[in-house]
Each structure stands twice: as structure tokens, then as C-alpha cells.
Amino acid sequence: MTFTEVKKQAINCLRQDAYDHEVRRDLDVKNLFATGVVDKVWVAELIRKTSGSGYHCSPHHRAADVDVHICRSWKCGGWWYVKFYFMEPDMIFISVHL
Image 1 (cartoon, one colour):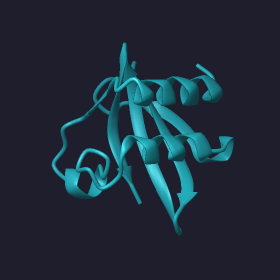
Image 2 (cartoon, one colour):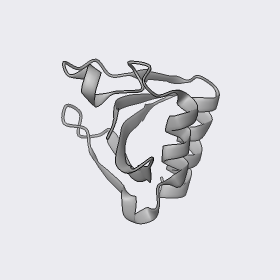
Image 3 (spheres, rainbow, N blue to C red):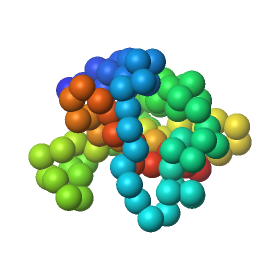
Image 4 (spheres, helix red, strand yellow):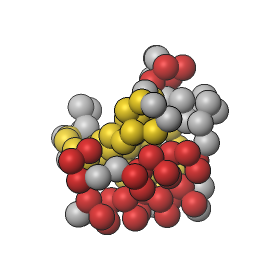
């Protein structure tokens, strides 16, 4: 999947409420979307604003066949990180944080 396709699919999943959040210990600092600090419009904007140099893809640490997409973009005075993967038909957020 190309970076453009990843962004398009991710934004579509957000628009359709087709997403969930991975369970983790440090949720309050590592996933500000899951805790309600930011909303899906904010996250979609972060993904949309990510350039090719701010994108990286790597295997999930528990399942090497799952691609984790990492978007890094500047918003409101800081670099934001958005990490997610697709589990059809949804996307799963690992983290959304500064």
C-alpha cells in the first residue's frame, strides 16, 4: 500500500467511525485520542498533514505480518506522532501523542 493510499484509507476509517484503540499501560500519555484529549477530526488533520518524510512503516512488535503506520506532523507548536494499523475493516490506533 502506498503512503497516499494509507492516508486515504485512514481518513476514511476515521470519517466512518471504523476505528478502535489498542490496549496499553500508558494510555493517558501515549494515546490522547483514546482518552478524549483530541478528537477524530484532529487526528485526521494530523494524518492529512503528514508528508512523505514524516511517514514510516514497520512491522508490529507482536505480529510481524501487520504493518504499523507512523505519521509525524507539526501542529500547534509540536511534533505529533500517530501510530496505527489496519485490521479490516477497521484501523487500530496504538498511539496519538506529542
